Length: 248
Picture 1: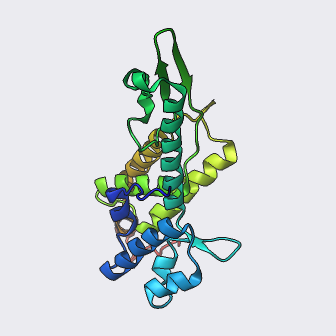
Picture 2: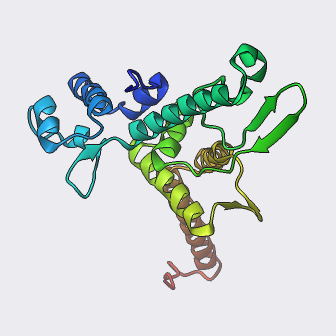
């Protein structure tokens, strides 16, 4: 049976649609619902909802080799929810249903499975088993959304363009080095993103605006020229000449 729902993260939606107007947001959420029901969208579906080509709305979807459109984040959330349901179903099949309250897998209590390292504890009368999930690298949209939340908390110290480029730089960097932090494999990409944003905030906060730097340079040059003029005037007075020409 088809899953009748998908997880909707309100803060991610607000951050990701900040530059869309209300009409575009309506088109976007309608297309997401349609994708959830159909799987993928044709160009005709997209134009039917949008009325005409809308670059901002179309940019939220990826076009595959068959010419169909889909939102990558929604596809990921649908897969995660499906995996969640299958895991619970398998757990119940393996264990005695009459004892289900004691054998419930604790890592499934939260459907938002975004943690990279989770302890999975399965208990019965005779054993206690602990396993660990492998690190799953994030999608660029996940990195962008988290950076967007942190940027909003920091009073939008980065522009939208800077934010998009910063998320892409993060992904390119760790794709190139094999997701290594220091000398060890990455375990928590969210913490790494927070560290990147914290360093960027500190760098931007400590930077002086270009106009201030330029004004300081001009002031130093002006002060130096005044000193030179005073020196030439003093020499001219001592040697009883009208003026000493500049050597520059």
